[in-house]
Length: 104
Image 1: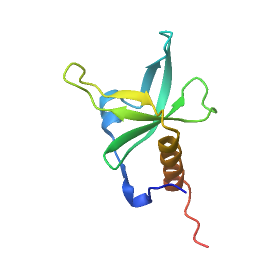
Image 2 (image 1 turned 90 degrees about the vertical axis):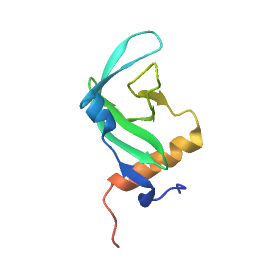
Image 3 (image 1 turned 60 degrees about the horizontal axis):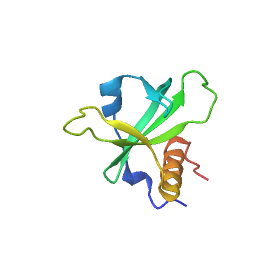
């Protein structure tokens, strides 16, 4: 069970406005890969993005943390969520908010 509820999630569009519907992520080895921006949202002040590989559309989605741009870097940065509890809570909340509501 996640520590967040539907009321904690706010859908956003700042990445889509900055990058469009597609982004390229660069791996540590310097190679870039295209991704589709599926969703972006904020939970208690922290932004997150849901991406899926454009080359492998049937792969699982990537859930990333969005860091705001700094003085030297205007554009936001997408980073891996290293904390397992944070990833689990945000992943469960996203699933809860995107899956149909069971009214039984």
